[in-house]
Length: 437
Length: 172
Image 1: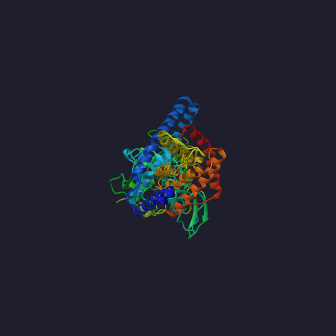
Image 2: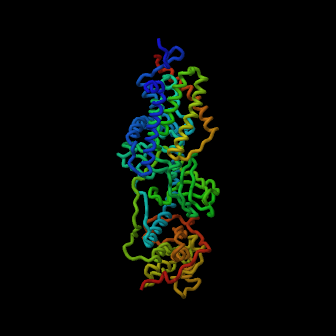
């Protein structure tokens, strides 16, 4: 027996080592299924501790040298770029004014409907310092870990979109499982069709959206967003774009998605360390009706100028405010204010205002009002019209309302200031804007 | 004088200093983890495998080969999120095979090293594929053209790495 062992010593040792490793592998697989604690934690900590300091040092050196070059030596074209950026800021300020109004309105409507709002309240910026070097393990290491507040299952994203979630956390580093790994899964929703599915990676590195029924129509180019259903990624983050759709097996479509973020060239990322979910609260403490809220969006007349208007101006601008003469007008009376005549919205929506006096003549101030309240009517009409771009008429907002006084008004004549009403949009019911008694 | 499998009469046996034994595999692991981030095409290479073959063929000791291959593989596994043992088992087999084969044939010339690396790269991938599919139930696709191409690429890189290892190995 001894001679046999001596003769085949190497082979016996090989079989023994392989047996031990296979046994260890089986234990790990079993524990992973049972969601037990990680039995190989110590080995991983050692390996990560041995490799990542060098990766950190190299990444730091690379970033520092790059910063020195870009911030001190290579400044060619910065002045021109600065000028362009300033122009962009000006344009974005106008855009921001519109978006803020949209957001305010959405918040108010959400509060009325009892929506729960979910938003990212805290992130930690981190740098990608290394990968795993394995095609079967598509994950990267970050230079932030437990001591920086990183926890498992936190979402990781870039400015382009979602890239993955935190899988393992070590003291000063963490491992992020990318969305193109075959063991990952992201609850996703298609932006326009609102079809939901699960985004997974494949062994080849492709990303597919699963569990979408084959009888659904999914156009190529449609955006894929996070659905929030997985409890990890907040809802509405960009994931990617549909690149190919084919019929797969088991009645499901085979939808290929190109990730919005370049997963092969990751450098700086954001780890979402805190996501808050709260009931949307209105900033108005008093009871507010939907009609009142939406009425704030309607066109109005600017304050009456102290001096007489120059000749040639529209007569409507000089007319007295019919609302102010009505003591019982209330909040809904805002809808009856005449609009600015220079707003494109004033001529694009010939609808009848429900709050307008019944005896208004076509050429009276009230008649002008009638032509300028279309957007508000649609919004006030209730379900299905919340997204109507009536809010894209900032030039026509009531100066006296809270929203209008807080935000700068875009320049008149802005092409985005008015959006024609879609023909399919329903009109409002007059009863929604009855003045309070 | 007794002739053993490590005899230098037919083939020469080398050893590596302790710093080289520790630092070279760590450097290989580090580069394998770091370079693909900057150069995505580098994922077709397997530097730890090349180092395993290099150590095994130089030492020509099957026990040392399998232990070296097993440790390097386990460390490589530890950097991934997959269970530890996938690379460990594959590199244990490769380390054992390369050192066993190194006893029987001359692996000092470039041609033999080139072919040996292709052979053991394919063996490594087969073992890895088998374990991943059967034991861990991972979805993997096998492609002979891809494996052969990667084997050739690794063999080409291996020639450079073996030349560097030749500089640090010490003759017994």
